Length: 513
Image 1 (cartoon, rainbow, N blue to C red):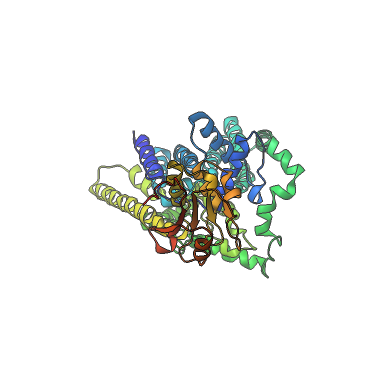
Image 2: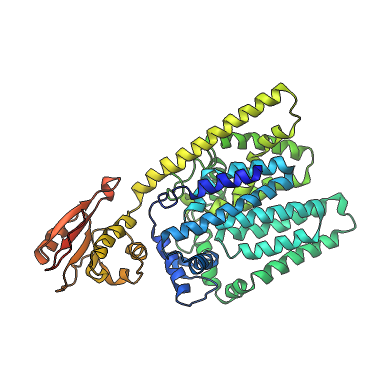
């Protein structure tokens, strides 16, 4: 019952006003939509080379949603797809917590993650970021269970999910490094004396199973290693820009900045959460600090599995901390998504510790009430940080391409053909491909975007519609060539306003107001 309530709360946070927050797509979304369009047109790649290369799962998943449920090929469909994946991570986080501390810890991990802005923002973004969270949680669950039980089922779970996870998001490539780490601790377990050869055999079985599941992707890796590894190589090698002197010093600072990201300094990017806002709300950050203390205590009591947790943290942070060529990208909100299971496992320790104790004492009741108040504050702050603060900052930073598409659609409904509508790209940095996808015609963008330094093509067709920047000088030139009327479409921020220039015809529709 409690898990169902947590699942419902997570669904609310993931789907509440999904069309409005985040409100508009970026160029990354346009690239993703083009990849899905390739699938619609019949192509079936195992690796998508557009935009420095991407793993295939999101594109086939989105394509399946389009084919099965008839969803349109647009930005909102991308967000629906990733939000569903984010929701399925909650049961996996519950299993991880339950494996490490019983039902109280499982429920605590899932509850904290259900409304936390970090995993919620990754899942609502419509990009591949959240695809690393679910398989990482399952792999951790299977490995911790293997260290405890040494069973074949845990071995197979690990291998299968690693193979599947490699098809998701690039940061998951660090997760296979957890396997030798867990096996090393299993070998150190005195219960396995005389059975250590079997542990090594289990490691080989994990490798073979994951390789079998990921065989097509591995085949591509062998064929085109330059494309498969290009994105990672640009961060850890001198591919796009030279690595600064003393790379070990850069790495050390990256690790320090990552440790401070959760409750102090955040990240320099603004696309997922607000710039330099901590990854966690104040309440969860406080629980994380308390959880670290409890973690150290458990390790001091020679808990073999809990000793793996801090080492797993540093392994799973590598996709962000190894950004040596671009240290400003660390800490990365999205590349550190593999840390979500570990961070929330530690943060949930104090909550589970409290509710695992006998509930007869008045002190326990008071402490329980305090935790309830703390969690209520956490829910409130996460809501405010994401749905108010982030919504506003993102709305100000990203061009309102969907509003532009809706403005053009008003004219289309009155009979103006799309081929008589133009985006004056000389004046607007907006990605016209996103406008085209929202209009339902991806071919509109390459045909109807006027490139920088150019005027619209001469045409006798009427009526005409042009999108332009209100502050741009091109409007005067446009009026000389095509007499018409201009109106400004006001947005939530003045610098996101855009203009619509309408050139009437003999039987022109009435311009929308």
